[in-house]
Length: 211
Image (tube, rainbow, N blue to C red; front, side):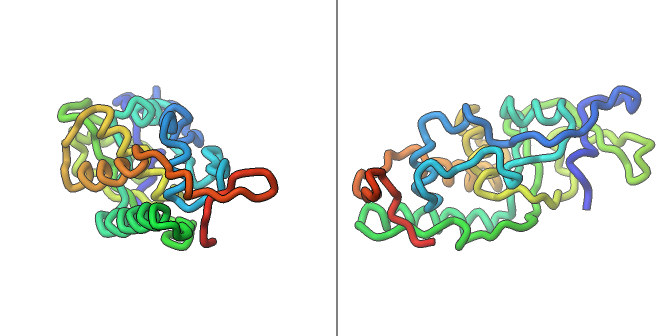
C-alpha cells in the first residue's frame, strides 16, 4: 500500500520537503459547526479533539498545504460514506424525537481505512510520487485518477468533515462519486443542535448519548 508521504508538488527529487504529521481537520474548519458535529457524532460536549492521532496525516508540507487550502481531500469508500450518512441521519432524528444519540465509535471503530485522494476543483497541477525505491518521481496528472488507494489511521468522520467542507466552500461538484456523499454528510453539520439534545448534570450540559 502506497504512502501519502510519497507525494509532492515538486518534480525535483533534490527539493523534496520532509514529511511530518499534520492535522487534516483544522480549527477554522469547525467554525459554526462544532456543536452540531459533536452532537451528530454522539460525543460528550467539548470532547472533539483535533489533535488526536486519528486526525493526523503524514505528508510533506506542500501536500499538507493543498489539503488546508481545500484543493484536495481524502474520501473513504463510497459504501462507508453511505453507512456514515445513515448514522448521522439516525442521530439527527433521535435528538429531535427526544431519544439518545449513539456514539460514532459504535458506527466505525478506530482502525486503518482506505482512502482515495480526490481534487476539489476541475483543474489543478500535477503531483509527483516517489517510486518504491525512493529514487525516482512519477508524474501524476490531474485529476490524479492513477493514484492508488492509501491506507491510513485517519478516522473517516474527520476526513469526511474536511472533504465535505471543501466541496461546499469551493461550490464544487467535481468527481460526483465522492463530492455528492461528502457534501451530503457535511450538510448535516450545518443545522443547529436542538436544545433538548442536551441534559443538565453537575451544573453542566451533557449530550444525551449512548456510548
